[in-house]
Structures are given as C-alpha cells and as structure tokens.
Image (cartoon, rainbow, N blue to C red; front, side, top):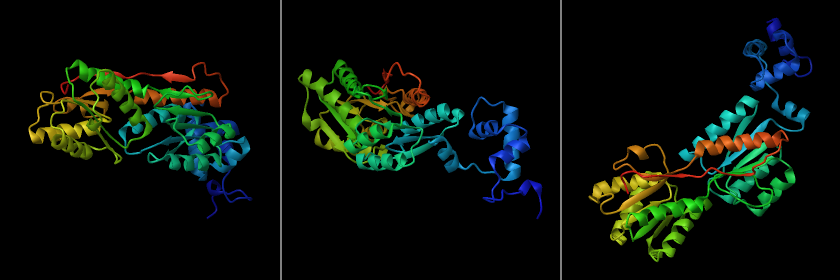
Length: 342
C-alpha cells in the first residue's frame, strides 16, 4: 500500500533518523537526543520526535550509532545475582542516574563465579561500552588486564580497594563483621557463631572481621562457623539453625552473613521453642525487607545499597565525560540497627 508514512530509504529499506527529524521539524542531533532520553531536550520536542518515529516505524540502529561515535552508549553492570534483593536496589539506583543521560544498562550476572565474571568482561569489551560497573574487586588477573588495556572507565562497588588506579564505592566489609561481634559481646554473649552462605569475597570479609574480634576477646571457637556454599535463602537459614541446635545447643549469639538466613533462623527457633534473644541473640546483615517486621524484629547491619548504586553511577558518568574524580574511593559506611532479636 502506498503511504508516505511507510516510505523506506532506498539503501536499507528502513526509515532513517534524518527522516524522523524532518517529520518532527527538528535537527538530526535533537532527534537523536530525544530518542535516547537525554533530559536536555524539551518535553514537547521529545513527544514530536517520538510521534514521528512511531509514524515512520523508525527503530534506532544502535550498531551504526556506536560505529559513528567509536563507542556504544551502553554501560555494562556486572552483579553476582539477579535474585538477591541487595543488587536489585543497586541496579535500580544506577538506572535512575544513567538512563536520563541517554545510556542503556546492560546487566551481566556472574553467579558469584570469578570465571563467569571474566567471561562477561571479555564479551562486553569486544564491543566496548561507554563504561562498566563491576561488583567487587576480586577479579581474576586476566579480567584486570582486560579492563586496564581497554581504557573503558570502570567503577567497582560494594567493597573498598586502595589499589592504584581503582575507582570504587562501597563500605568496609571487615569492619561490619567487627561491629556485629562487638554488639554480641556487649550483650554478654560468649559463645558466638558465624553463619554464612554463598561464600563470596564480601561474605568472607565480614567473617574475618567477626573472627578477629572474637579472637581478640579470647572467645573464638572455630567449630562455631557454619558455612555453606549454597545460595543464601530463608530455607537454608532454617536448616543451618537446626544444625546449630543439634551440634552446639550452647550457642548464645549468632551473626548471619545475610538477613534471609537470619529470617529463616527466627522461624526455626519459633518452631523449636528457642527463645530469641533469651536463649540466643541474632544479628543479620543488609536490613532486607521484612527484617523490621519479623518476630522478633531482627537486629541487623543496614547497608547503603541504593546510595552505592547512585554514587557509582555518578562517578562513572564523570569518568566517561573526562571530568576529574577527586575522591576515587568512596566509603559510605554502614549502620548497626538494634532491634528485639539481640
């Protein structure tokens, strides 16, 4: 059917950006910015451009745009899990910062495996993104070399590194574990267990801080570490607490590497008639949704997950623009939230 709104270009058979701009009555660069969501374009112009694109059936050619600019307008974000609520909060914050500047977010899931993370980095750098945000700094040597050689700006999140040339936003995981131990000791607990799952580097750093503090107090017992490589979950928390009660019913304090484990343990304690905090005090980590409403309400270490994502995105944006970054290592700290479980 002959229709001017369906006219195709002779070379590709697809409408072009220039045609969209002409139909909307704007310049080509304005049309490009409007379709990329850049927030400097007036809303009425954005609507005109989008209407024109819809009428023409125009679809952005991302490959051509990347070739023309020698880079893609994409930011790759590597996280270890898409089911962990911690990283959902981080990703939402990154998206809120970068999307208004025209960047698409490409999410890679490493499943807590350094080798998978290395493969993702190799894959993404084959068509270099504008920048990368990578969870943690425990990359393989090959991954570090690829990032350095690429020249792609990169920000590491959720932990701190003082290595040369490393940009990162997070908090001191070791100190968080130390704070949990100090709280339990201050509550008079002398037989304290560390319970963790997944066993990624950040979990182990928390455990190290917890262990050091108990050793300093002369109260560390290696038999009171219950570690599972399985994914962290409420169900696993139930199982691990059951193991503790069967093997070491004398335990009177527990630090959980993540709140979902602690939430499961609270349920199992309720089933078994174990008093919390009367018989055993519990401290979680991350202050996940539900922890403030559990029974009893869970004492936990609140982490600034959304702020980590926001600050990392702002840092990366400055690096992409070639602007100075006066503070390459940003420590956002954490907060001990004391509730009824301890």
